[in-house]
Length: 240
Image (cartoon, rainbow, N blue to C red):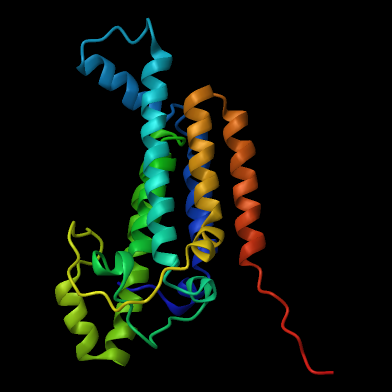
């Protein structure tokens, strides 16, 4: 079922509440998901995790940092071909189809980045929180995609249908599926728009290195408020 117009317009806040619910799950499940995975992996490898638990935990959290880093790159790559205002707008834009950068490999690189982010950050949450975050984000992302695709199909018709037939929705193709349209990437704009993701990746890497939650939450707080400030619409000049 596709997302409602209200959900699409307020998708940033829906995602925020998915994250909040995931981390509040610590109140009913106190064990961290990465610790649980590391302990299970150590037992599977017949390793004495009790002798060097930190190494197993650091490896698992580092894996989460890599996933968030991939999400940051993928979103930055995609956003560099979009206007930042379009990426954050409350309306679906159907004026043109993009045929450059990651859009030649996957139709929804930004939403794929969201899913990778949720899995990576899920390793900071509890076991239940990991499921809430990764499954909740995936379900919401798919519903957003269904809404956007229905409007694109309505407005773009056969051209969008052909694009969908050539380029996968969420599982990227290793090779480009359509020719490039020749549009340039605006990397500076893309990095600025996706700064929050890079800061979260940095926070995850810092935590994997130190295993200090204070370090993670410090960098994450900066990331959150950076995103909020960038998201605020600029005041337009009005004629006097």
